[in-house]
Length: 187
Image (cartoon, rainbow, N blue to C red):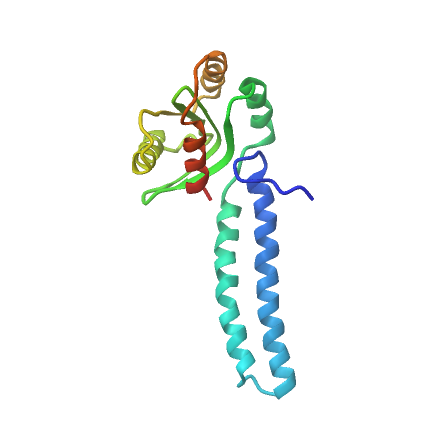
């Protein structure tokens, strides 16, 4: 089975399945340890009960990750088809979910070219200015300067801007750093 990496299309859906498997496995392991101790001693007052309870800690951490991936929607197949025909080899990321102290920002698609980081937000209730501000602060904290950040909510405008960026001829010296930063701060 081919594992989908962070930033690739379908990452959220793939990671959701992985987190479910990890969470269930860890809880079942703790249950098996507890039951093994109970069956061998006839009471739950044994060392394996403590091991089983402590085993619930990593299982609970995985459960939190699983819940985060359940809440994230990812890039829809329809949006992916529309965007894919306009990217034409541009360095891009799919399924980015960024968290700040104030809000969680879900960006189905991000692209970088010519010191421009652009993304599309599909939720109309979302405040794009807050996301742009968060990305600016993350870039400045990581010594990435002179990056223009724009998050669109209007798909036709975003597709038009993708076409413009695709036709832009310039050298991208920061593309790797910016996209690596976004991957690092995304779930």
